[in-house]
Amino acid sequence: MFTGKGFPIRSAKAFDNKQRKYIDGIHSPLFGTTWEDEDAFRERYSCECGYRTGSVYEGEICPECGTRVGYVDVDLGKFGWIQMNTRYKIINPAMYMLLQKFIGKTTLDKIIRWDAEMDANAHYVRKDNNGRDKFASIGLTGFAEHLAEILEFYREKRKNHEDYYWEILKKWDCIFASNIPVYSSVLRPAYTSPPEYHYTKAEQAYNVIVGCVNRINQYDGEIDESNAEGINGLLYKIQQKVLAIDEFVFKMLDKKTGHIHDGINYESPTVK
Image (cartoon, rainbow, N blue to C red):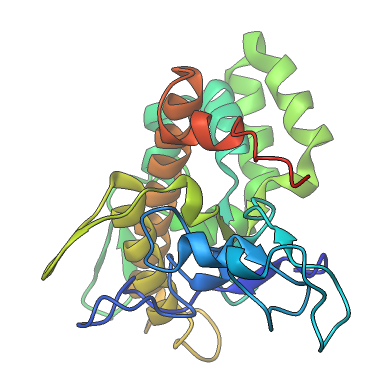
């Protein structure tokens, strides 16, 4: 958020019961208005401070900031950020794909999916911990803690994939993330019809992520046997939803059609 164009997303709901946008929700008015919004056309014409808005003032000088009222397009550089406590990590989607190629899709999922049971002494015992699946069921917290060891272990087993191993090492600082970007709602059309709000796949995933992050940030202290299952369960769900958004956005861009493509290539009218 150091660019000044980012803001935190904390609300797991997009609209309240009167269809108003939450300032910290995934359709925050900080993203700007879409043409479906009631005030969209008026807000397209503004001075720099926003004191004068509306096409009726076009060309006038604002008495507050001294700038001329003109056409102002939506800033697609605005991003919301869902912020986890930095001790919790998920895998960057691009790096997730690279890790899949190196370790294997099924194997990677087995590792990050927490699957353990309490024994008679109240200690967690992983269900799959044989030689072949040495790191199975350790969850995302275990994956982050033992990543170097995991990569070395599979390097010996997958020698024909060593190029991926070196590629991962080169991008080591990009593997994990604690902050999840929420791209502009202008590129995520909202379909509302009182009293319902129709979610797209991206909205559904974002709202689940916000809810999970709000819960996981409530965990205090060290990660131990009292909270490991809950934390890793939430992290796994967040990871899956982040991957779902990544896939959804890629398909929207890859098709070269639809709302995202049209929004990015939209040419705003020139104020003469």
